[in-house]
Each structure stands twice: as structure tokens, then as C-alpha cells.
Image (tube, rainbow, N blue to C red; front, side, top):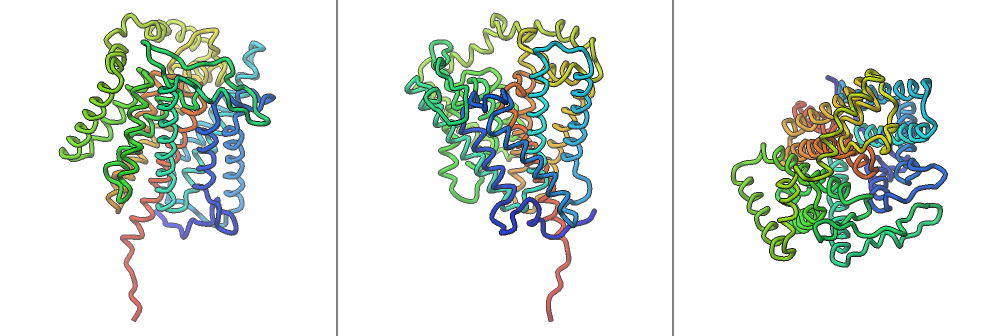
Amino acid sequence: MTVSGNHSDFLTSRRGTVDATTVLTVYLTLLLAIPSAMVVGPLGSAGAPSTIMAIGILFWWAWSHIQRNRSLTIGFQPVRAAMLGWLIVMLAVYAHAMSSPIPFDEISPADSGMLKLIGMAGVLLVANDGIPNLERYRVLLRRMVIAAGIIALFGLIQYITRQLFVDRIQIPGLTGTLTDAGVIMRSGFARPSGTSTHPIEYGVVLTMILPLAITYAFKSPSRRWLYRGVLCAITFAVFLSISRSAVLCAVAGLVVLAISWSNAARLRLIAFMIVIGTVVYLTVPGLLGAVTALFTGATEDSSVASRTGSYDIVGHFISTSPILGRGFGTFLPKYWILDNGYLGMLIDGGILGFAGLVTLIVAAGFAARLAHHTAVNEFDRDIGQAMLASIAAGACGLAFFDTFGFPQSAGVFFLLLGVAGAARRLVLVEATIDRTPRVIAQ
């Protein structure tokens, strides 16, 4: 294992004012601040400003690697290798789809799907390789938590007013405003969606960031009052989304997060959840019952029946091209609505595409776990475990929700995977430097 020198020249402007953290912050802002439905018209679903920027980020990453004159890694980088390997596989899947007989209405989705995948790869690779140090890594995570808090507050406003507000936004050059849309209702409750396409996506995005928000709220060295306010907003918004997928993702994240905590910390977290549950019960009568009914009445739920009834259809489509699939994004809703990202990847990317995706998630999970065990700073160890919990929440979401079908959920998930890779790299640098004998000047 070798340690490189200072990484600050990689993905950094000559004046040192713009680095990967700054660029990823702009990407996160475009992803969460601009309504998902708004795109550059001629580019279709791949024309979201965040997607366009993400594709540019990939080229920036490639150009920076060409220009750099020294190593920026410590040994093997598993997250980067897994992403590049999966990207090569998915390019082969795309080539296979385009060289095979394909219905005309699947060509554009295949093109858009590949462009979006390239953009997600760019975000992950820049996060993995470009964040220059642990300070800038913490800055990016803080900004992710604050961003989640802002969209959570926006969702609460939508719930109170029963107004979307995003349907009134017009941005020059972008089309697809939700002029005919309204707040989606469930069990008599208005379900906020923030700037997301749907309340399910809104809830899943918040639950992916929830473990980080909890860690900052309970263990941040400073401004815990701020992060606790953010955590309350996020938790309340997750309840209001009335989403089975969001609840399951939250449970997965909380279980993984609590594994490394002391019993006292777990009791504090349980007490916090009880307080939030009580506030929800008192301020929004019937909401807890509506959330509970998502599971007690699951056998009679049409969405659950759609999920469980999809396996025969999935088997048929997989059998037509089991190795390379039919092309990323080509399994259209007209065939079936899967609500399962893993099954969708098996159909679209075949066994190789599915294996590549799972390998990437596992690699990022191990990177976060290593960051947790290796970090010199106690708070960085806590953040490493929170990253693992966030990845677990996102991986759980793939099983109950079509993550790739929604821009915000896919963008946040791949950003988290890349940040996990950066955490591994940065804590190894710090740990190695910490163990290096220091020469005292005489």
C-alpha cells in the first residue's frame, strides 16, 4: 500500500476555489431544487439539468485523470473499479440491445437510460476520487443533510397548504411543468412530494439521508440544535409521505446504524422516535393508523399484488436474453410496473448487469464499513457507520421501488456510493499519516 501526496490538485481549479465538493454541491442543488419533471425538451427524460451536469462531470473526471501527473489513490479503489466494471457491462448491454431487433418505442428510452447511467457514473467517480480531504468530505455530508432538511420543510408546507407550488414554477429553457398536477391523497391525507416526481421518491430520498441526519443530530461536534431541527423535519416528512417503501428503507437504515451504537445511544434514539411518534399522533390524528395500515392491510393492497404478481412476467422477459438483458430502460410501464429495481435490472441488464449493480453496492458498503473501523476521529467513525446505513436504506429501496425510474432517488443513491468510496480513501490516508513516525527538528 502506497500513500500519495497532497490530493488537492485533482479536480480543483488552478486558483483552488472549485473542487469536487463544490461541483457535487451544485449537482445536488440542481437535483433537489429543480422539480424532477422539468427537463430540456429536445433531450427528453435525459434532459434534466442535474443529468446534463452529471454527464459533464464524467468528462471532467476523465480529463482530470488524463491531466494529473501523480497517483491520487491508496492502492486498489474497489468502488471505482466496481463502477467502471459495471459501466463497461452496461455499455455492452446497450450495444447488444441496439444490434438486436428492438421495438421503435424502446430506442429512445434505451438512449436516455444510457445517458442517465453515464451521468450517475460521473457523480460517483468524482465523489470517490475528487473529494480532497476529510474536511471537504464532512462539508459535503453537512450540505446533504441540510438539503434534505430543506426539502423536508418544503414538503411540510405542501402538506399544510395542500398546494404543490412546484406546478407554478417556470424556468426558461425547461419544459414539463406540472400544470395539471395536484397533491396526491392517501387515506384522506395529503402526501407531500417536495420537488420529487412522486411522494414515494420523496420519502425514499429522505430516508437515504436519514442515518446521516441522525448521526449529525446526536454526535456532531457542533450545531447539534440545527441538525436536530433538520432531523425532526425529515422524520415528520417521512411519516407524511405515507410510503411503505420509505418506512422499510428507514427501518433498514436505523437497524444498521444502531448496530455500532452503545445501549445508551440506542435508548436515546428510541426515546426520540417515541417523542416524534407522539407529536405525529397528537398533531395529525389518524396518520399513524394510515402508516400502520400499509402493512396490516398489505394483502389487500393493489400495489403489493402488482409486485408479487410480477414474477411470472419477469421470468418470461429474462428468459429472452438472460446474460445481457434487453437494454437499460427498455422495460416500459406498458409491459408491467415492477416497483423493484433489482428485477428491473435483471430484465434490462441481464445477469451481468444485475451482478455488476450488486457488486457496486457491496463494494460501497465495505468501503463505508472500513471507514468506520479505520477512522482516527470518533465522529468520522460514526459517519462511516451512517454511510453504511444510508447505503443499506438505498439498497432496500431498490427492492421495493424503481429507484432508476426516478432521477432524485438514483442521483442521491449514487452520490452516497461515491462518498462511501471517498471515505475509505480519505481515512486510510489519515490513518497512514497518523502512524508515520515524525522527525523532530533539532
